[in-house]
Amino acid sequence: MTEIPLHPAALPAAPSRIALLDMTLPEMEAFVRALGLPAYRARQIYDWIYKRFAADFAEMSDLPLALRTQLQAAAIIDPLRVATQVVSSAGDTLKVLFSLPDGQSIEAVLMLYDNRRTLCISSQAGCAMGCTFCATAQGGLARNLTSGEIIAQVLYFARYLANPAALPPTEVARPATVSNIVLMGMGEPLHNYSNVWAALRRLTDANAFGLGARHITLSTVGLVPQIDKMAAEDLQIGLAVSLHAPNDTLRTGLVPINRGYPVNELLDAVRRYIEQTHRRVTFEYALMRGINDTPALAEELAGKLRGLLCHVNLIPLNPIPDSPYQPSTSYDAENFASILREAGISTTIRLRRGIEINAGCGQLRRASKIST
Ligand code: SAH
Image (tube, rainbow, N blue to C red; front, side, top):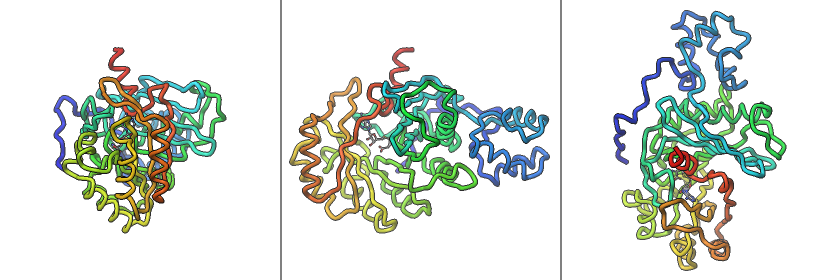
């Protein structure tokens, strides 16, 4: 995959204060030593940030006041500002549009289920992949997120769940913390590989956020070399692949990077991934009326996936403005699902959470740009 150059104007502004969320524990130890402090202070700060979700040095009550003031001048914890926040009428979906220090914006969505608190986060400001049915693709890529900007989205919602009084009331009982994370927000996570994996290491590190890797899923458009790289990682992060079509003619029209990584090469990479990791892979398939939802295509898909340790998530398309695509009817969706199931392929039709609050795929950012 060739790196897509960033427009110079879109590069992040040089921060005047150092970003603590970008640091590993050894890096933070080096940072506190450079301030003339003993290394154990780093562990204290790390605990405040990752275990107690402090967003401000003022909260760090076991640090001397002079040290808190010194840190305040030298470093920043939370790089995100809330631009817009929307709660669904059922109170079970919360979507936040964050602005970043250089004026870029990104979205994250928290979905509360009975037994799970799933957070969908962004890996890039914008996206370079150009999928023709996706709202994020319409604006192109602005830049990669730093590892700290990725982690900050998680800590924001961890803080929200820990302190219900601070935010709008919801009707459902609020569970204690983020239990699952999906990298299915804005951006292509495997196009920002090193920052995404640096974030994943800290999110799973028991010294930091400490979420089990199996509770995290990374969704990719299908970048073959990076899928192979991911297969060799020691963390057990789940893989989801956005397939959307069983053949190259159709898929290239929906997912242009298919030209570089055609369906069969992608499925070969998934096969290698499964052999290496023994983990089940999820295929995402956004059902678009009259485009990719016919019984013939379901048969073709079943043929391609037969024998793979996989699950298919069918998602009725979330329609976006200026796009010809519409969601499939529920009849066609059910029919498509039955054909896959009859072929022995585990399949679900995923509920479209948060549609009423523009919680699908780059929509809140787009709406806010239109209204400003
Ligand atoms: N770039 C990654 C992750 C971000 S998108 C990827 O492609 O997987 C997360 C999922 O939402 C992908 O499966 C993507 O294809 C899907 N998606 C994008 N726009 C959509 C829309 N309008 N309706 C339904 N799903 C959509």
